[in-house]
Image (cartoon, rainbow, N blue to C red; front, side, top):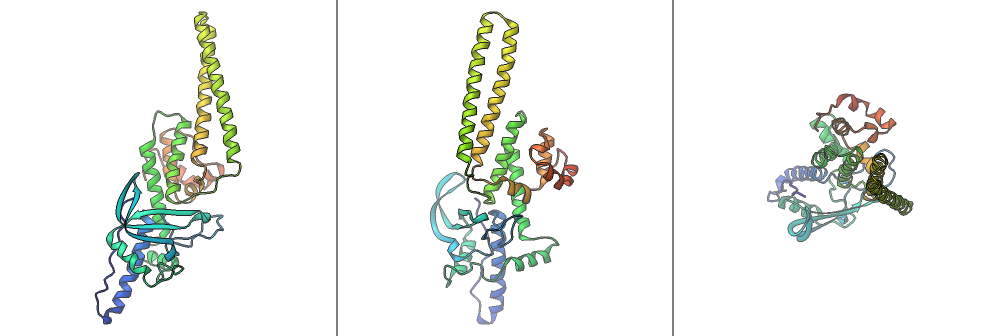
Length: 321
């Protein structure tokens, strides 16, 4: 994770400059929240998504107890465990009360700002007590019509999907392999936005059934291989050709089962639908489908296609977010 940056809060001013202090502090609070929203894809605060009822925490509603500040700490960044200065640890209930935990190295000035914000506060006090979501969105709306804190989160999610698809898509892959790639790209977005869920109660049973199907398919492939080999030895070209055709179909069926099982396992605790329907620019998915000849119904069902009909009409295979 790249360092987060905020402007410093200058305290070396005279008593007559108290108004200036309030302005600078409020500006630093706004900037801190927007940086967290943009770079960490954190919610601004108390906004709800369609169908959501559980209590959630976001930037504006963070309490002192939800962060920890370490002048130096060993953490994992980009897959490497190293010591970093000015580390902020976020630990709070996110969407559907699923825990959000992240350790992030931040810019020194941002770190000092956060140190200032927690001074003389109790654990259950608001971290950013001078601002709420309504005030923040009003400020953003004054800067640009329609601009809200969620726009930053939406941008980050869409940028991540486009980036992941560009990096991972293999044009030579089958539709089933391409869909695994798409779901993995979407999964990166869901993780970024903390769209997690509890594993379904039937998950273990579903995986057990999937393994049984894979085992049966593997046995079928093995049997057909032996039969095809025997037919070649018997110099029976028609039988060998027919068996080879059956073998190819059996291999394809096995591959589909393996992909389905892999996809299910990888998304055991990830809610892919939330980001796909609420945060991602649908033109990215539509363009990707058109470019790699993936049926759009593989990504969006009938109701969703109706909702995003404008994107289906607008985005061609050349569209890039």
